Length: 320
Image (cartoon, rainbow, N blue to C red):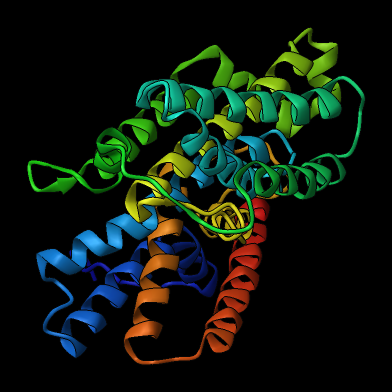
């Protein structure tokens, strides 16, 4: 017979491949549909703004984490950098708001430089170097700020965390610019190509003459600066400096967003859009569970299951 096309059913491998490539985005759409059906207020402007306020700091930290993981490293100090940034703000607001913000950014860069130097120059394992900083920086932040939270009333700092532009939180615009910049760096610059190559095969990159130490050092500095920006925005939104509580478990949330977004923990690839989607998915899951009064302990079990599924999916991508 001619003129007839026989459609063969999709193979299991094909279906699995589609799920691995687009399952994250399908899950986001599904959650939005479910939340919209179950709650008439989910798509309200007020609720959408709340979700943006909550996801942006995690997303900023996750962007830096994605770059670090892309080189085959890890950064456990990002939560402590948030705490450190929050401690510096009230100390320097007496000079000016921009002095305080600049000091916070410098503190984040220096923290990243210390971590990157230990890893790139002294060959300390990334998990060891950043774990030490995670403990030390948070202790230092608490010493600087004291045990109790301090109110922050500076209009510039508060504006970064609360104000809106065209009806969208200002911090969301900050995140959008940084996402686009990160994507451009990874896809369009020599630095981005070097970063991915180093994560894929560090020994070969060294033999090829790539500036391995400089690139590794740079990604930790970038990660520290992004964490400091997240800290500034958190202080602006919360109107207080509380290093004892700010940034707790942010390193885990960032790693989760990166892994769920498809960046392999072994390095050699950075999925910027996937990282954004991963952060959004985890925020939607958290919001859905809170909306239905699910205890935090169960929410943590859900997050653990998602990480396992994401790691399995990443393995599947690498074998295809």
